[in-house]
Length: 66
Image 1 (cartoon, rainbow, N blue to C red):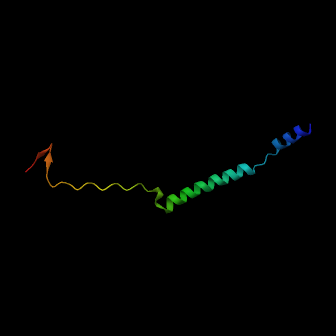
Image 2: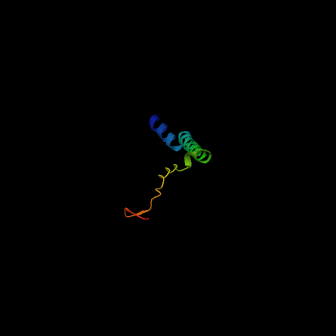
């Protein structure tokens, strides 16, 4: 019964260090992401491409206006 007593004792007093370590790791990861988005350009949208130069000719339905 020694083995069963060990299992019961473990279940009554579980070690929370693994859970705490994972929680701290996730929290630090999220803080790092927030920090990078705030103080770098990672949070900014990509620049729009420049539009093509406009033609000086005025056309409507491929008909040149004078």
